[in-house]
Image (tube, rainbow, N blue to C red):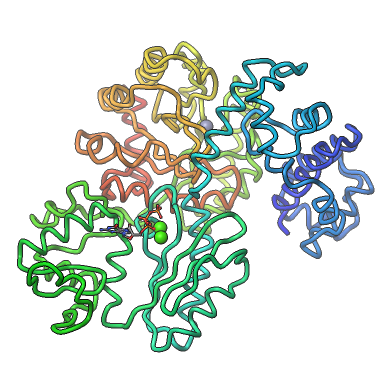
Length: 588
Ligand code: DGT
Ligand code: CA
Ligand code: CA
Ligand code: ZN
């Protein structure tokens, strides 16, 4: 296990102990141990373990040192497994309701006998929660809203999580001897920010072994449907997956159909009809009035000269439409005119601006983050740790920021990494729109990301004015996570996005497409129009650890859905152009 994975286990242990009402000192010991691990480097941990020096580290005693060593060497921990098994699962579920921590859950359990979501819902509806010390009517209301959100969101999953499950399934299908072609379709293939269920399309010479493999996959909790050529399963997380097996000559039609979206399919089918053709999941055949669509591969059969989606679109007089654009938002008309943009690709990225280190709430050091960026082949890595008002995220004081800038300049001068580090800040936008640092300090940085991390409940006018004021600040380079939303968890704050975009364009400020799979903020639905009006995008992973840099992949999905090209996205620009742009901006 890596040190960050071990830190996660320790903090989960703390949470479980707290849920069980264990001694607070014990709980705090695990929390402190988790934080102590986060602050050191991977190589340091390996060295301490090898030299059996772990217990001499501040915040880590004998018992913890043993557990960390077990996790590091075996990848598991017997104590942790036993502890998990000893806590009621209903209590753990409650942690997902915003506003409920282990302490509050413990109180609900001890005083009202609440052990699961259903019981909590009833207690809130009956007003019993409001009467508890430390809760009150407002808290009860917030809990009910959280429960409602959970129900509404509960059936969808973030793209990243869905993709992590889907990847190995496609690879596994392709390895079966009966399988000729296999793809994931549906919203996952379209790169939607959330996914309802997975859809797999397979061309196979023999179906039974493929269905058998699919329903027998590791991690399947329930087989919800099983037929001759299809099957559906449900995983532990609640995510469902559909499998459809077709003869090879139908594969491309099935793939297109089940990629969707529904709106795109409806429009494309209309276009086919206007050309005397009938398009369906089974094929493209001459339309002969009603009933043709249901003719399946019968008389006529699907057009056998169509083997790729490009050929399918060509048969309808269109250029290839990338899956991400298939939302029925004008892509067919644009493809007809041959004017689809050449969309940005993951390989176009050359760096990113919004990333954290252990100086604030990140979990890898400056050197580790830089090494990871270098491994990705990035030309530049922007470090933007939190500013002083974000004390909950260990925001940097003026002194600490200046020290970090010096460290960054020294690291660059050492030429230890091929990646150039840019010194920035994620500067809080204060409640009235002022920035958290003064101009003289900001002037010493290469760039400034400004973000809202407090007072989310302002009304729309106040929040909009607050953001606009921050964008008008001459030192502001880009705006971070514009709405503050957390997908499937928290709505963004109320803000007039259109007016904020206007202000960004008017002031030459970049808006971030935060690529963290929880955020994908600003939403792809705004980008096409905004970019046409001159708004520049930066795809930023908002990485808090080295693996977080990979999240740019999710940002590229969203950018593609927003019709963005390489030119629209600053993080594809070479370092020289980025530096030139930053210099010119700083000089106004
Ligand atoms: P999801 O799963 O809710 O995230 O969204 P999708 O787009 O993956 O939807 P899903 O799984 O229900 O169906 C996959 C695709 O199959 C969908 O994007 C388009 C196609 N499809 C499903 N039902 C219909 C339908 O009633 N009409 C048409 N034209 N296409 C459909
Ligand atoms: Ca789906
Ligand atoms: Ca489906
Ligand atoms: Zn932030």
